[in-house]
Length: 375
Image (cartoon, rainbow, N blue to C red; front, side, top):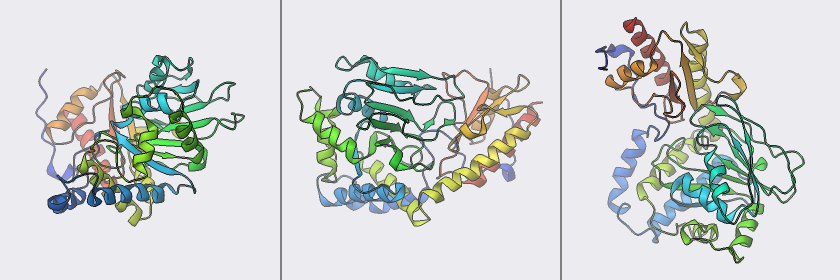
């Protein structure tokens, strides 16, 4: 089916039409900074001072932005969050883990743990898309695996240690689409891991993890054991290299640079509270609009569980959201289609810190205009 030809008036259009949930819009200022530094940075050895200084700046900037307690360390390695799940099955889970499943991405770590032949059967606690379950202390669980923000559905959860959990158990948090955009208490988590292509407004292929002293001790203990671990997934090797401000193998220097620039921009403007407040403003705009709309409603019914970095908005049967998204794309407003496996008649919109809240407001005006023209 061809897309209807509906030009949106220029006065309605956002300044920037990138609203995808990953990769995020990258701030033009950061790209200009990268271009200006390219001659002495890109194409140089990641073992030498220019790149290691950038890694140090990123690690220290994240520690500042997250207000990490004393003793926490920021680790990094190649491969993104998917690689980190596998690394965690080798280097962070001792025997049995508990996983909260409430969407496409929150279920992947549990599947990785279930497939690992050296681990016990994981405990899975599930909720339907649009909701999230709660972690529950259980005997024999040494790693509680949470997801702060489910990117596929737009559900976020507060991070808390399960009451009654064993003192030596770890709380591992997938913060891939949350880190740098949602508030959290680092004292409630032991490993806060993520990739930089969302709230950090960079490219993918890298994982970062803020680790507590208890998590560091477990990494070192497992690394010293006789457990076989491929070098690429060895968190002991990642820890050793991170302390030298480098990665085990060659990283994307552009990814490191852009992530560092985003963290610097956030910290210079007030830190995580600044970034989260921008997301709050965007979220209030889009959810208030959806709540008041004749044909739309927020997919996540509980306001307390609605993500402030990824919004999902359902439409009734009179509106074909796929057609609306196609018309928006033809007008330069891109990547607002729903997550492909969710199968809902909805739009999914990123509200990451690098996306201007005024552009979120303009997007709602453009959606209304397209709907009016289609009717």
